[in-house]
Length: 341
Image (cartoon, rainbow, N blue to C red; front, side, top):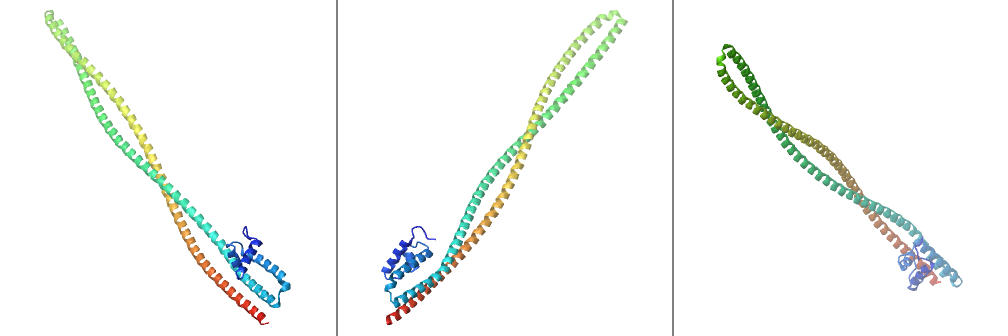
């Protein structure tokens, strides 16, 4: 099919210019004269129409030798055109194959670029996940250190609580001993007073004096007991405060343990994501390697096709030279007998 702008008038103009220079208006010469545009089949059709028209116009005035010369020239032209047709078909097939291979190569290059971009994105994602994992591990180590400190503080509080309990038990024992002693003393005083009353009323003054002394001693003991009660209440208050502190510490420890479990779950999740990303990266690398091999094979195929094209061009040139060589002797041989006549 002819390209845009190539018509019979353009072909005729190029043919007349070649004839004016004294050259033979072959298909290649006309095509070169038109700037390497137009299909050779179209140019051949237009040249044939122009040759037929010139033959019809010059037929009444031609001699037999001119007719023979024209006949030989047309036969040579037809032979050349018939030899050119398989070459044109081979060139068309090669051009189609080359375009298809170039399209496949372009698609392979685009796919490789997309895979490279995906690989870079996965590398960045893996770096982010690695940084997040390092930060999580640092937080986990910090929480573990804090947890160890709180456990140590809890152990210290438990030791202090045991000491407080020992002190409370000791004070309670002292309080019981003091109360037993007071009760025993009261019973002894009561028995002694009854005995003194029975024995002699004259000893009443002495008994009263001893009773006052005993009362004073009892008051002293009562003050000691009161002080012991106060110490006991104070220790109980401190014990309740210590228990509250222990409860708070246990609650904090529970929260820390929960946070520790969450961090462990997050760390496991991050490890799983990293493993998945590493697997995707491995698959992407395999695909990239496969594409590189495909591109290498396509490049090798292109080189082979270029070599085949070079061989085909060499064959075309050889056929062209052979056709020109065949045409020139035939033309000369047809012209010489005409001159002899």
